[in-house]
Image 1 (cartoon, helix red, strand yellow):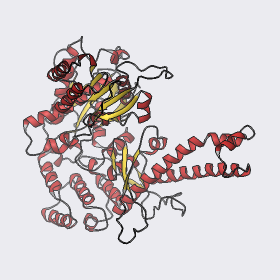
Image 2 (image 1 turned 180 degrees about the vertical axis):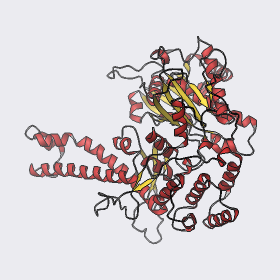
Image 3 (image 1 turned 120 degrees about the horizontal axis):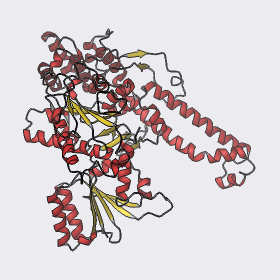
Image 4 (image 1 turned 60 degrees about the vertical axis):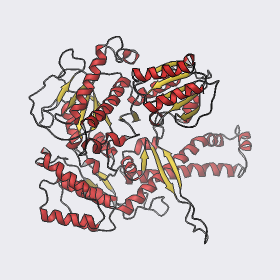
Length: 627
């Protein structure tokens, strides 16, 4: 398969940091030292892809926020990476007037309008700094890549394009147009970076169709101008004569409202659900210790610690989609292995009579002791391994604390049974009424899943009983009121989403984490193993990939921006059914042919537009396993 979107966006960023020239392959050459100026949007795009060390290797000595207080550095060039907003343009003009840097390389995340470009030109002319503005580029990088197979549209101001924003009662037409334009701009940037023109499929009568129509128009207009098309330059050179086309499926969020509310059981999804996890970084509060403060003394403040979960972390890459009990066992195994290696180094030092000696004395005897040499040469690797073990021990311990205090294993198992229509061994009312079982939000999420997946809505008397129990548990009933209205006005009220034979399988006791020497005390936590899911979006994607005729997808519109005339080609009979919704999830697949042959390879992308605290990573993990 071709390079992933993470690789392509990383290459684009490195090219930008090298003054929009391909980076030199000769790493021995000293880079040109420069400063990087970005806004919050640019920071969010760069931080998951490039570390501080990588920036330094590319000659970035300082990286500063555009709107921070910055001192002049007159003999160093500056690379700007910002959104073309009014505030940012005004600040760039101010920098030009103050002549903070030797030269200016202006890179805009999204395309800058002609009027704003003229504002910069006027400011440069007035400040006699025209010669200092060396280059101005539209980078078309207005999206955030978190993994090889996942991107999000934005992190800053994400509530402006959330499910709530699109479905609120006081939404104006102008607001809806602005939201759609924001989404389309990010998706257009994605395909420019990918270097491919997609075939677009979407349902009818909702925001997904609005996005599809606008994206098709924007792609078509760009392709019409052959001289300035973004899809015929260097980015397309490698695959210009390839018959592969990406299939872009805009799926309506309302096709599956239960999955984003579902409590999770895999490592990555649990971290996203219960911890402060954004842009591949976990932030946790750490206590100052169990010792009480002296009488009259000010209590010690909790410190916040951050952990980066990156592609270089092999443990994370291997276990992020694993059930949590399996992760706890793996962390314990890694810790035991590390301790055995550490004890071996200590034993060798003791045998050589070097206990407590410095590293210089050890290296003097390296010629005579092959084992010791090998052990000492592996020390950097051992230290990095110890760092990662400590990282995952701390993160997994924090997740385990939430599981035990909120009984998340009980919620997960119960919700799986609700979604798979399995026999329930406990009354829903008992869980809601249990003061020790989760927070008020946990109880509301559980009841909403019950209400969404129920074949028949509960009677008014039963509903009032549930409402009273939820109110007594401290729940806000406004989500329930919305779901009631949503279910009354959508066709899904008659045909609830089918989640197949999903479910969980309880296993025996944990093997390595139940012993007294384990870092994890797992007593009381169920050892649940995931079964395969068949989520609604999985079925939609499968039908469209295989070109199957199915009621779920027969209604989907078809757009091909490369077609010279017309924007839609009928593949089957259409039914005029409308649903109210917003757009939440996008999927991209690779096609070997533009005709009615099935699609073979798939890469999926999800956008984090949820206004709830549940994890879409859960849905993506389930879909990955199903694909």
